[in-house]
Image (cartoon, rainbow, N blue to C red; front, side, top):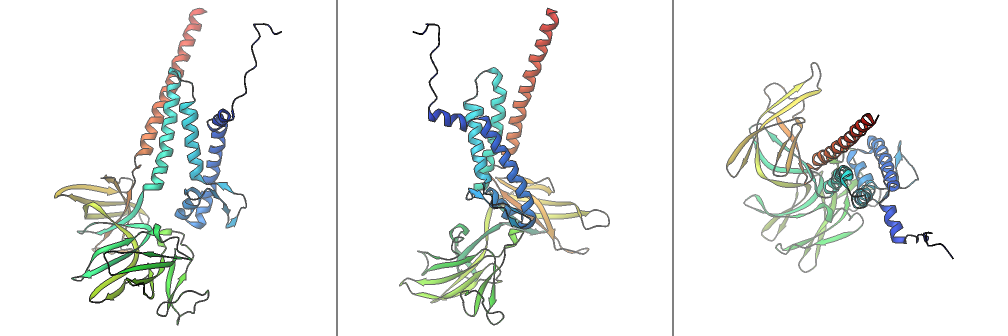
Length: 405
């Protein structure tokens, strides 16, 4: 018979509790941070050969749960978890371990604040990944524009020409056609007298005449031309997508095959009865809520070189008749209405004295644009409180030691 003072053995933790402890534990956080460091290092090496955009998509896209890294162009047969999911699991680990599971008390407040700052940074990265848009806007001195062109997304535009102008433009987004390399899809237009069937999408392609070079891989032909697939460009914005299309009448009759390509100089013109339509593949355009006028552009270079020292654009933003002047230069963007304008480049290249210049702005639409800054301040507050609390406790302990001596 056991004595009353002897404690009973502790019941083993449930599987759910063990899983929670593992998910919120410091060990998992250490492994995830190590994996994130390895993925970042490998991506940095690979982007020299594959380009930044392609590498980011490979290593940190949500559609890539696992990746096979490449070193010097050779695939390493060791699957690694995708960076997106490593960050997602790290966010969950910090939320459970650094906020929910942590001991509550005055001394732990700085730790909770610091962990919250890191979580804000990680969630901001996810918001940027899913919802940000990037494009460019080129505008000449004295000219005005309110339309930005997406860097990467190619779309198909169907428009009717009235009074020599495109009207009622119908846009098929890139996400709706990028999976059609070996299949096709019918897109219906209730307001038009026809529908459109699209297939054979290629990320980077060029129309080639069969008389110039015969197709070698059974490519589809359209009026003596075919789409020749090209390797993806290292700078992905230089890719020119292409696809095949067929006009589908209301009775189901399909017309001849048509080539739509970003490398084409003009859209395909279609006459339907007495009406004229254009079919075009081009980079997506998005309209800004205001006009931007370039008043003056100034470029400064390091002495004796073509290396840029400073680009300065004096602009006027016009919205609802109200004008506001601003300056955009390197490292000093313009932020307004959720859009950020960075000074990217200028043209034309090699412009001579007195030649009219144009400025190229990178336009970024990112709901989480300022989140990294907010995260930084939250972490600074948390660490300041943490070190301040440690200092107070240290001074108090030294004072007690001196008074008791």
